[in-house]
Image (cartoon, rainbow, N blue to C red):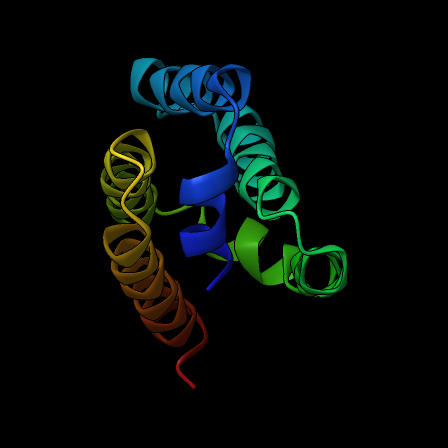
Length: 123
């Protein structure tokens, strides 16, 4: 839902920031620290752009709680690559200002993240 709200509310500056973050991920997908930092910032930017303070704060709390898992599964190149591809789809939907497409893209990304966590943890 937050991605849909963000699609309607993102400023041009925030869209440029998201594009820069994805470009950095593409350029140096092997740099784990860069990937981690840009991944966190990508999601944080979308959360803030949603304009919903409660959901944004809740989303940031989930990011903090999930950071150890994120660091574990991002070590796998295939998982990083899938995440970058997901980010590109999310970004395209946001740039098109298409709330439904942004929601679908983010939902699929979350499914992919869940699957990655299961793959890494065996749970």
